[in-house]
Length: 213
Ligand code: NAP
Image (tube, rainbow, N blue to C red; front, side, top):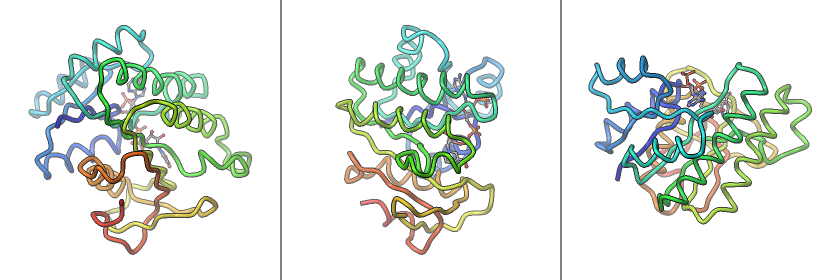
């Protein structure tokens, strides 16, 4: 197993690297600049260039060159504006799904968002275009023949690990430290029972390793 982390320079991506290292899971960090690649490689972290705004052909080459057989999508435009949200969180994600299918990379794990499937919550969220982008990226993934898992975390914090989660109902809100999202992803990667499933998560009382079935 070799995991390509798309968005490895991000906060969750960084933390996921540590979790995969501690579990001895092989990975490659997907990064969008040579400067980032140089910095990661200087720390002995394997890296692969991937720019989600690039052409389908270039993204195909990046993912093929990574040698990965599992993709974790944890990229996002963040505060770069809704034009970039469309290009990265929606079209960038969909392009990686198309490439995964073309290359026969079956396993695909998406970091989505809480309420991406709950239109009633979008107006009050203050980030409706982001919700729409996440919603339709998830919808596309459900329509592929990929072995997907979709994680819908609540608001992300930089707090220390709780190590425990709660599976939320569709209308429930919550928050979760990014480190526990990373731990959840590392747990899901190794668990075939999570294929075809979606989880809304926040901090809670269930140890992460037993939470996803
Ligand atoms: P983050 O720190 O902003 O990381 C996002 C990463 O995406 C960054 O490393 C960024 O690269 C990368 N990226 C941006 N444009 C790219 C491109 N064109 N090609 C390749 N990579 C690109 O986000 P996070 O806090 O770790 O969040 C991880 C995920 O959780 C995101 O998908 C986010 O939407 C989702 N989420 C967030 C919340 C929340 O409360 N914030 C809640 C639920 C879900 P650079 O480092 O070079 O900018």
